[in-house]
Length: 318
Ligand SMILES: Cc1ncc(C[n+]2csc(CCOP(=O)(O)OP(=O)(O)O)c2C)c(N)n1
Ligand code: SF4
Ligand SMILES: [Mg+2]
Image 1 (cartoon, helix red, strand yellow):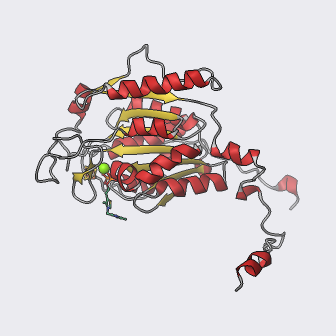
Image 2 (cartoon, rainbow, N blue to C red; image 1 turned 45 degrees about the horizontal axis):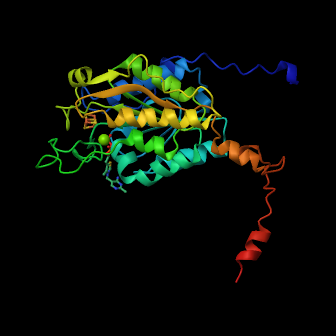
Image 3 (cartoon, rainbow, N blue to C red; image 1 turned 180 degrees about the horizontal axis):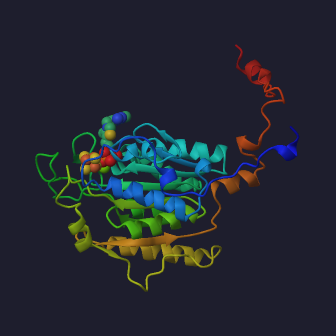
């Protein structure tokens, strides 16, 4: 058969149905994780992503079961470690869209070191954190975002620790997109996910997530609609001139000031800060002449390795 007779590969149009996997959703009834996975599928379709070039990554937790439920490539990794997995995958093949879904305990607790360090690199990956205030999978202990004084089912006394502000930490660490939404608002979530996916650089979307089993009082749909409000219409967190560092710093301060003025009873949703076109880690590698592994020749036409490791072994020999 010559080349002319080979049928062209046609990628079918992406639909919600094509994103549905065979795995069984075993989240509790009413869990906002189900709303988040639906919003993610909507966002993948709306952003026009290629199913074969989209990767879903998670850590460990109820929320981290998400990659099983979306019909794209995925890795259910280790507790607190989805960020380094995602960074490695993106740097190996920058053509991929890499999206992390993990919990607040996973990201802001055991994974806090990776969460902060990621800001210094600005790899073009997306971090969607299902923030329910508890370690739900392990029966509802307090997570780093549970406000002081709140009593949830998994702790005997009201929380004695204060809550972290992950959005403020992300802005100071170097994240170039920082937003917040909530798991029962499908439209707002989808819109913000699309914005985060289209952003060039590291994006954090903190998703206030209802856990009716372990934190029913403060994470239900009625509580969210009463206490979560979109940022004021005259608030603009987007940097208009990416090379103007004065503007960048002003927008960062505006976001941090807004976050500091929030109370546990009144939270904003929307894009707090966005700095498009800041150098990503990928840009920095290109400037140093380092190509991603995907574009490097590692084997000949017969599949035999072309990498000569003899020098490395010589150096290691004792
Ligand atoms: C290294 C390690 N430490 C602890 C655990 C136990 N563990 C599993 S999930 C989890 C907490 C998950 O909480 P979160 O990330 O908020 O996810 P959620 O279940 O709330 O969605 C813990 C402590 C583990 N699996 N691995
Ligand atoms: S324990 Fe909470 S977070 Fe986990 S599936 Fe049930 S409702 Fe969802
Ligand atoms: Mg949690």
